[in-house]
Image (cartoon, rainbow, N blue to C red; front, top):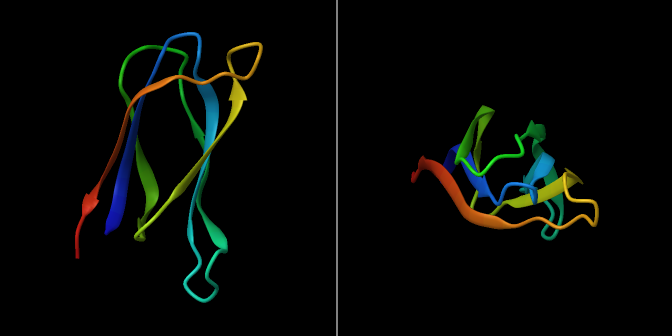
Length: 87
């Protein structure tokens, strides 16, 4: 699948300000390459989407949420969408 867009809906007050997306490395199982760094989100309940700078071809992905808006580092995700095209 070629991933082109990621959309997230957080609970307001429990969102992440920043995300790093990683995709599997093709040559080494269990290792990850950065697909896109520093995806920024607003602290809102609305569905937010980000078009990737460079579409990534992958079968799996890892999203690392950083810089939490909640004092205790909690994140509540109501909806997560990955948009792309199957090859």
